[in-house]
Length: 368
Image (cartoon, rainbow, N blue to C red; front, side, top):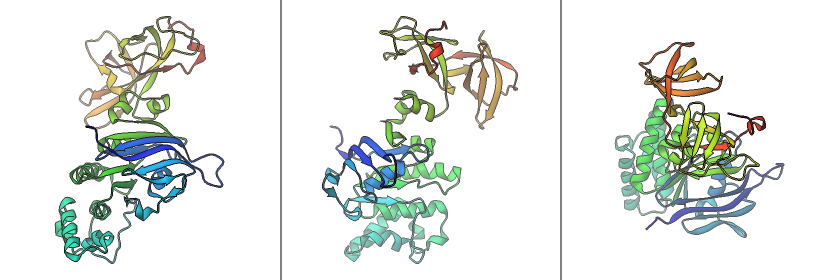
């Protein structure tokens, strides 16, 4: 049986008095018990406002929010933050410098019997791997250790939902990656549902079971990371997530499109441009190609010119110019170190089709 949803948001709107447009508008999503959701988007898209609305730190103007099956915000309902059953982890950790690590974790357990409080703190110290640091102070810990203390403190009262706002932004890249994996495991081990806001797509993919992409206050897509990357629900999501290029394509039939590199086969209907009734009439669309869809192959008769290259350690991302002048990206193992201007063999290796109506009206009826 499917897990019950710990978070239900329906048609949410948030509008600030002085703002000309809503900060969040018509947003709906659900999160299953035990799942981790992550919201990404460009600066000003409304993702932090969404998190604050769930926490009760801003008042919503329309829609509703349910946490753990209970309405916490909606028409005639505005439950205070401390009674919503949510935990908060802030960007700056917000630890109390004058309290020891065990005292920081115990802060939200005031009113608990002393023995139960001590037992809970010890369990959380074990969970986040900081047993040896219980009697130290925040300034004696590294940034990553402080983040784990903040996480343990938020988990201490057993919240129904944990909210995390850019929790790793103050850490270096290597530590962010390692700590992200640790935090995911800690949340899974504790059975805690969470919603994370970040601007780092790779961080979102590594941590989350569900990823949401926001744009101008609206949720463009809320889906599994794989679907977000390989089956984007809108052109904005396709453009925003990961790397990729759009190539002009001609629809051959309901399951095939032709591009300069060959024929792609898909398992979903293909949207044609405005004015086309059905596929199979030579309609023109644009196909999204990711770097891993184009493979370097010395034996291939098809070649392209290297115009740019970005070294990433284990691989290069080449920008390649096709004979038509169109450019594509290719992910190539780093032992294939070709120079800019050199022509290399390539072939298409895409097992799915992602198409969108042509953005260039002049190509809608032009021969491909």
